[in-house]
Length: 117
Image 1 (cartoon, rainbow, N blue to C red):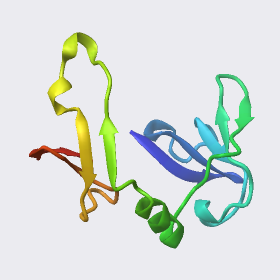
Image 2: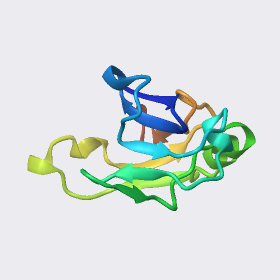
Image 3: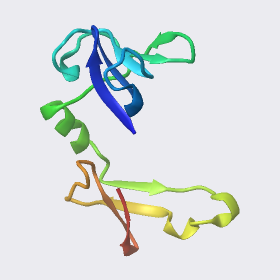
Image 4: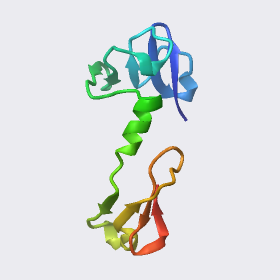
């Protein structure tokens, strides 16, 4: 699985097999106690080098709740699927009040039995 941990002077995201090591795929070079309190730019590994990711943020608490609250009241999933597979579940989805695993969830507008979460 994928995990987030602190090692050395940075927070890292990587494979569970590397837990506690100073290697991973995403990092922030900050000795902060909590990753969401970092004021340093996050970086991603592009194969051999670390590249700045200025749009990447770590959210928690009220900031996370505010982002979740921004979920659109309705969304549409449209477009072709390979060999028209699962095309019947595409369409208009309406936001539900209930979160699923901490994230917005949606019900298909014409089918209460189909959901998106």
